[in-house]
Amino acid sequence: MKIGVIGYGGMAKALAGKWARKHEVVLSGRNRANAEAAAAATGVKAGEPGEAVAVADVVVLATRHEDVFDAIEGAGGSDAFRDKVVVDINNPISVETFLTTRDDRRSLTQAIADALPGAHVGKAFNMAQVAVWADPDMTYDGRRMVTLYTADDGADATLAELIEDVGAEPLRLGGNEHAYQLEAAAAIVIKLLFAGGDPHTILNLIRPEAKPIR
Image (cartoon, rainbow, N blue to C red; front, side):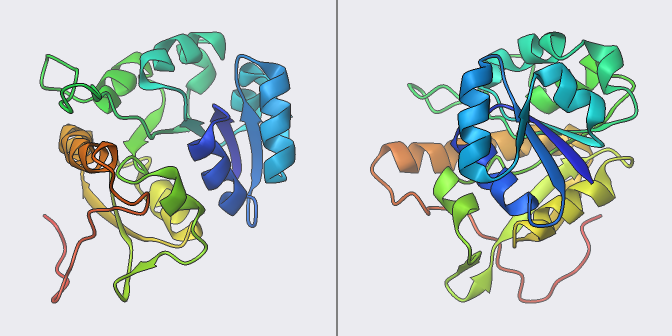
């Protein structure tokens, strides 16, 4: 796959570095010099956001959550994302209250899907810190890390593959109507991290008898 990442922070670099072992990855952002530095450190290509989206099969939104919609516009607007899989990794969480900041009880992921009606949208990679995604061994307490995600039907298989490719076990929670639950769960991890928790703090799912989620 060709993956365009909008953002060049720690999360973008950690994920891109793993995906680059199998896929073609372009890091981008509003500061080209920063994008080039991050890409060089990660071993991937750099480009402008519009360029990254144009060549991509998958677009990963790795900006701050406050900047997501500006980033979409800066990359060409809704039409530029048509028929692409779009992955939201953001958490609209206040670091003062550790609560979600959206008042409509809908997720940021759903708002992104509304803004990109021609794209296939999902949410993943939002429930752990950079150190976790950079970890070459995704095993914790003797168990492979389970990564919950949500996706519309057009994004499902792609998100599962991307999760596998970073070394975790994918588990679809459901459609994007459940993305709000992932954001709220991430608030728990963020609160623990701000309280001084180890950067590898995660909520890992224990499944003694694995059954499909309906």
